[in-house]
Length: 45
Image (cartoon, rainbow, N blue to C red):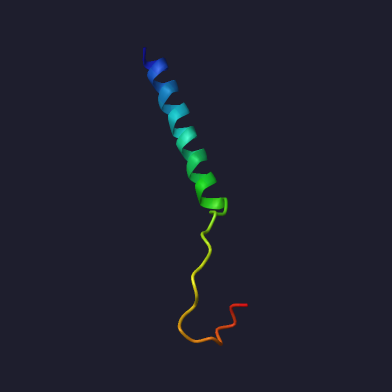
């Protein structure tokens, strides 16, 4: 019985670690940024 629980915990921990690393290192899809202010000379273009 302990082997089953231990295996479940190991698999769950490994899965969570992989999810964490994927979220940390893969770039997020960023939304288009809004204007950089009221001035027209902002070097945005």
